[in-house]
Amino acid sequence: MARGKKIYEGKAKTLYEGPEPGTLIQYFKDDATAFNAEKKAVVDGKGVLNNRLSEFFMEGLNSVGVPNHFIKRLNMREQLIRQCEIVPLEVIVRNYAAGSMSKRLGIEEGTRLPRPIIEFSYKDDDLGDPLVPEEYIIAFGWASQQDMDDIVALALRVNDFMSGVMYGVGIKLIDFKIEIGRVWEGDFMRLIVADEISPDSCRLWDIESGQKLDKDVFRRDLGNLTDAYTEVARRLGVLPTNGPAANSTVIN
Ligand SMILES: Nc1ncnc2c1ncn2[C@@H]1O[C@H](COP(=O)(O)OP(=O)(O)OP(=O)(O)O)[C@@H](O)[C@H]1O
Ligand SMILES: [Mg+2]
Picture 1 (cartoon, rainbow, N blue to C red):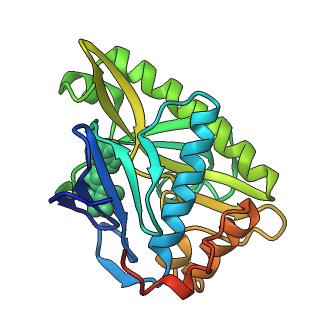
Picture 2 (tube, helix red, strand yellow; picture 1 turned 135 degrees about the vertical axis):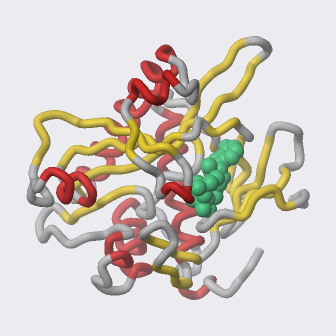
């Protein structure tokens, strides 16, 4: 499928115009970044794995009725998605304390939270995506109260689905981040899950050993990131036909 002109190049993905109006092609790069891009590397095969894994999770969400932007995978690194207007928030769902929450509150990483906790950060790289209360979001008009209720409901449904799928393959879903987009059907606006769902945007710990199988491997120099993502893909039965490493140099 011919891709149109480049629309946006982000840290992990590039967006191109899609074949039909209202569609985009999302190209998954091998670039890994952390700490607001202060730490960078090229990780062979990461884009291929994330393309596959995001396809797997988005299709699964679709099958349980959680609306999202995924249309179809095009090749090893690209998928066709529905274009939406991204709500400028990172929606974070936490089941266990980790990362910034553990730091801020002094709660040991891995502590089970009393219930899933949702938090929001304002998407602005220059500001380092600061955590914001719902009151700011509504007051500044980034989303309405109704949108926020819908976003929370969507996030909890994603959490239930993802937790169950991961538990089934011996992985604990510690936390994850999603982005939400707006699409219009006539005058009617709907909120759908957009961006990606992959080990870049989740914390995933092996239930038995506690081994980390997510981007913390890169953030904290815990080993080979591709091996960790490959393990997640292997357990889920989602592996590129020829293996990620073998195709990491193929740009198509
Ligand atoms: N369906 C969609 N329609 C429009 N934009 C999308 C869609 N899904 C994801 N995006 C946007 O595409 C970009 C994906 O690129 P990438 O994740 O590499 O960005 P990034 O470097 O993390 O930057 P950003 O701060 O913009 O998220 C993001 O800006 C994301 O918000
Ligand atoms: Mg991003």
